[in-house]
Image 1 (cartoon, rainbow, N blue to C red):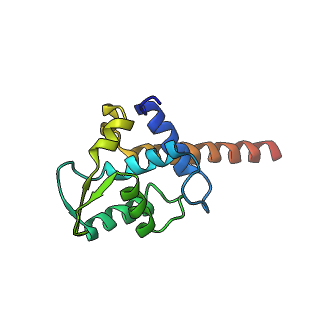
Image 2: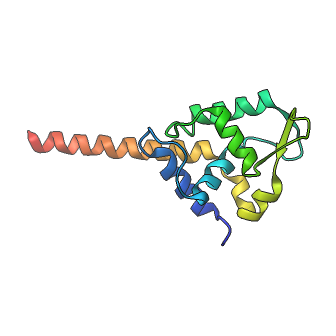
Image 3: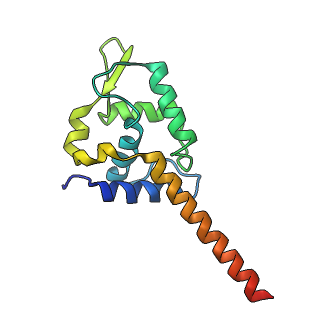
Length: 142
């Protein structure tokens, strides 16, 4: 399987995060990887995080970028650990990035992507298209 490129990362993140709400995680594992990577971009490599800090990052992601994904932050954190994006220490008290999984699946340039900006730009384009449609509909009905 080929590594996920910047273009694929942005396109799929946009599609996944702008879809209608009411859904949990997508069916395709590659889409899971894109969502998980977008969360971990808020974390620093080599740093240990407490569970509270990880929870805060995941909750902020769900409130912003991942608004369309219906899942609670605890379940999402567990998925991040199960998939290897986060590595929990043996005592279960701290977490760090699972760089092995990330480097295996993603081109290095994906580290420079700002997921919040990608999703915000997509939301703006969607809103603009909606306004244009409604304006054209108003003009045609008069």
